[in-house]
Image (cartoon, rainbow, N blue to C red; front, side, top):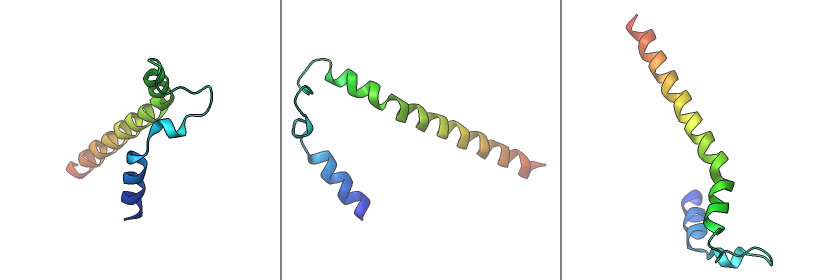
Length: 65
């Protein structure tokens, strides 16, 4: 329940309210900069998913033997 509450609160907050001087969220490049900042998270999630899929396939092969 706490996780859901925090998620809803974070999704409803304005990104502009987090901007400090010199950090313009209205800039055309802002989305790209944030995407690049989040890229390691996406890469890590993809690697974790690949690892889990590989483990699941290995377990399936072990049970067939």
